[in-house]
Length: 262
Length: 162
Image 1: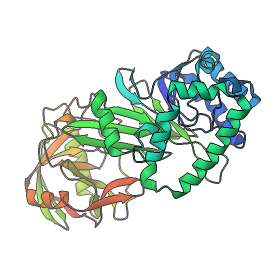
Image 2 (image 1 turned 90 degrees about the horizontal axis):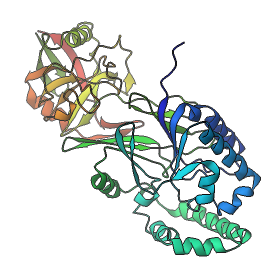
Image 3 (image 1 turned 180 degrees about the vertical axis):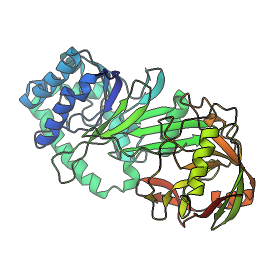
């Protein structure tokens, strides 16, 4: 039997892992034991965790399990890369050391398999959500993070719990318009980097958006979120194969409908 | 070798370049001659880019096609305005029945293209360009998984060799 050429890279995001969603965790662990081991590189593009109170929370059994599973992937020779999400932006150097992950800035222009790609979580491009953008600019500042991390772990978890509740309430009143990425922000990101491919998550609107203007093709891949614990199980990842082609797969590794045409 | 495509917006004539894209033209003619294209639609219309059809019936019902045809894009022909080319997936040799008419010069689709293969040009509209221009201007929207779908069906009523 012919050996399959090794997948160049896998991209995944928005698992929102939390104790209340055990099947989702199982699916992710199965992914790490299976498909992830076939890749040269694994990129986690944000919101792996539903929340992250600080690297000192790695000791919690739920988190330890996930850290160990990621460590095993690194130890198997897969290069692990990380971009923070809006939920787990407090992931830090201790987590990186424990898992073997390289923390990347957002956005990050990667050269993967000879292709230039913009990798991002996607929250910074939701510029129509003024409230979130203001929040984001505050909490991504090192000074804010240092002050927050100086609080006790119990205090941080309590603050986060109340913020999550606030977020759920805010979601109910936001229109769909606000919660997707802003077209101009996406265009600006493409323009500033010269890359033709972008991969991001955050919006939970998995899709491939292709635009052609001035003879330049731009492909924006949006990753799905994962939820195997609800009535409409969904999840998935993106593969860059050995031929340089990107594929969008669901959580069963079945490819989403492939578009035909230029 | 020419084919007339009759649509609900009028007819246009295509000249086929069998010398430059022999397998592609043979494949296209087999769909023409079997009546496959009758009652298929132009399901993907992007003004300023191209109009694509030959794969779906009204209601976005995809038709089963025959074997794929080899990619013959490296034939020197260019995706100039009103040329016809074969649609395909990211698999270079996945063209079957769907084709598109370029409505402007889309040189980035010429061999080697963005992916080392390009899209195979196999014909050109020689009469009825104004019909292509009517089709390219129709109102489109998103239906389910498909974007740029004409709001009112653009139907191929007949495709025949002349």
